[in-house]
Image (cartoon, rainbow, N blue to C red; front, top):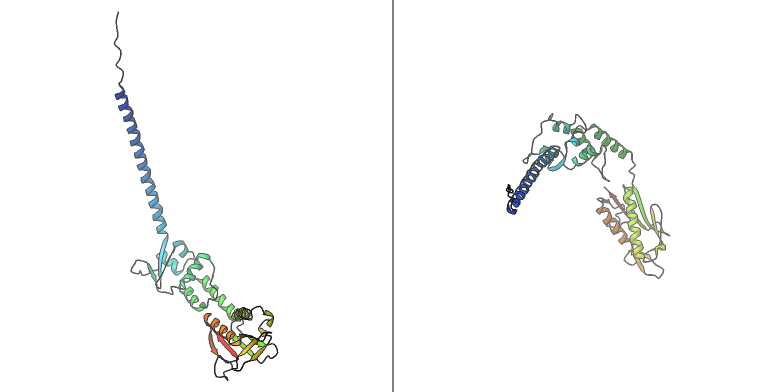
Length: 281
């Protein structure tokens, strides 16, 4: 009888070593794959960042820094800004390496907004049309120049007649206060303010005065011993002084940028005792 020897089976230690080796190879392969992906992504991010930076420009306009995209500055061809971006016009640099343009830095905000929006949008009360027209001419923006010119012509055609507000006695129109101003919107604001003050001082007696387009008529004005005109309520108490309303008018006008041109009636020796005030901006 022939006996064949059995193959020696692998021990548990050898099996563990083989399994561990396979696991190490898998881990090494994964690490290399991650490393490759990381390098690839970082290169893509760097390219994107480079492209993003290459589309931005910082301009120093009269000491004010503006950061915008090149495509905004090149929106209209054959302009000063388009020439700078495309190298047609040589522009100096400031100490930080930004393009320096020796123009009005504050007004450039409106120039840049015109490039962004394609239309002229100005804040309420803007009064620098001539200066903005010069900026439009310098930057060779014909569309902006035309819109500024159109806006200026419309303002010239708008009537700027002097308007007034009269605060008077319902029974004696000669007694009271007249406020003159060349800005109708200011007259409306000051009328609203005086009505508000009067109602608060009259304390529940709004029927003591009536309001029309340009006139506030109080029910009664009388004179006290020192000459101060007062509003008289039904219980004979003095409530809202005319000097109080005059003070409100003067303070509001100064806050809104108006100046007191003159008192139209200075015969009484001071503005406080005058019958009319004339404001102008």
